[in-house]
Image (cartoon, rainbow, N blue to C red; front, side):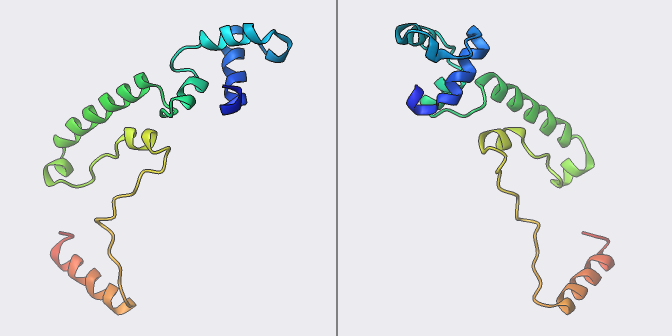
Length: 127
């Protein structure tokens, strides 16, 4: 555990057992305390290559996402399929690096092309 992430172990021991300097304790005691850490402790999650977000937080975020989507379906935007809410779980799982939805991005080769597209949108009422 120490080799994997000593800082995470120190934080967990301080949080759970109020041990601020584990090096003053016998190694066998530190091993016992480390073994007794919860599965959602920083060091255990890191050693198991799990997300740095506890499972209960992911479940709550998933519930929130579903409720937001259900509410969105009842709006005018939801009925047209526009402005869908961004899921919270994406940012938690991807560490805040969730890919942006690029479907609505349009690129223009010149200012003239942009002006023509803008005029078409104005004439069509934004549809």
